Length: 157
Image 1 (cartoon, one colour):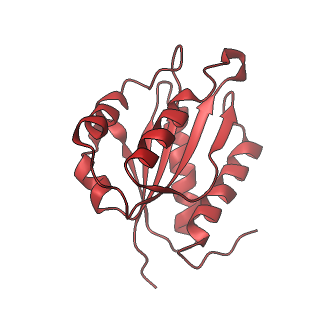
Image 2 (cartoon, rainbow, N blue to C red):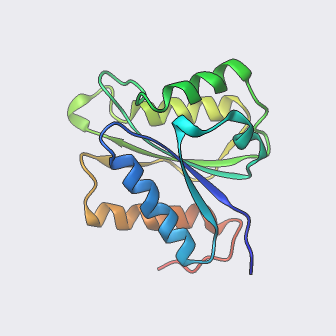
């Protein structure tokens, strides 16, 4: 059975969010759901307008800043204000609680912006505290399947 594609967009500084995005895509593909991973630096807003399902996977940099590769995409969304009313989304945020109040602030910023643009958050954000470890990655994979389960046939563990 052919499924519609889930877009997984990542913003990263050290590469951890990219690896998590790849892991999330693998979990979906294992269930027969087409998932494509894109660096936010390479994404045009039109791709989001055409999508139905998007997972945003981003780290937070410095004092709550977006990763540099995510900034142009975020700014383009703010400036163009696309209508994302038909889009379902979820946010996977990487951060470090030692940097409160900036813990996962980039993920919060994407959640706020996508909601403002009319997209529907399907599941609560998934957050990583510190570097991703195998147990947390396994939990994130299950979270991605929960996101997909509302639209696609997914066998959850």
